[in-house]
Image 1 (cartoon, rainbow, N blue to C red):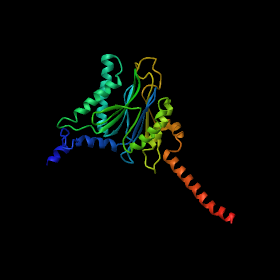
Image 2: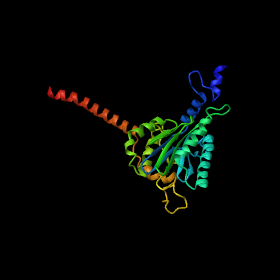
Image 3: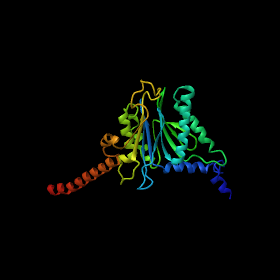
Image 4: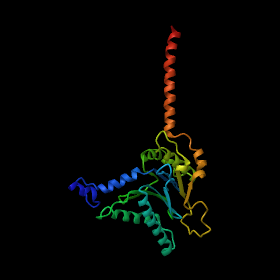
Length: 283
């Protein structure tokens, strides 16, 4: 009976110091389709894998625009993502109306974290079952933040969320030194390669199931200003527009490793087959 109190109440801490409802919310994020984010000194990029609920359904949206200089990719419950994205848009709009300036990314993340944290300590509420990767540009440059149901927000150079995200993290860690000076196109290519690592071995990355978004210099300027360069505001790319990047993907790291093992095995077999012949020639 007492165990149910800890399991079903978000504000009850178990004797082991655990908040079960928060852990369930984090598990919902892990079950969502993968999202990869990375940034350089000039740009920030999101790459997301879209899922279709059934063969008859269209792919669900995984990347949402918040403002001209902010966008999010999410993993977890779509309904919770819709509610929180609406809240974030309200904050961004209020900043432009009241202060005539774009909302700083750090202030947005602080407000979002405070709202989510309240649901982990109030009776009758549950934590949001969704995680975000947030990209944006402000006076200090491009940013990439992770938000999770605990109410924590952290800034990253590169990060991934969702199912099999550890495979993407491994790729990002191996290539981290290349991101700082990368161009927008190079960042997108790295993001696609990292996202591909999250797929099962028998599946290929398809253009129809991928969303790519980026934001660059000048995105935080007044939208009516002529100084905002086209394409540097938050932009979403899908479908055939991604063809050039898919053509440059090349083999995955798993395929390269498998090919290397096959070549090594063939070389060892050739060496083993050649050894008896050499011995016979000497005799």
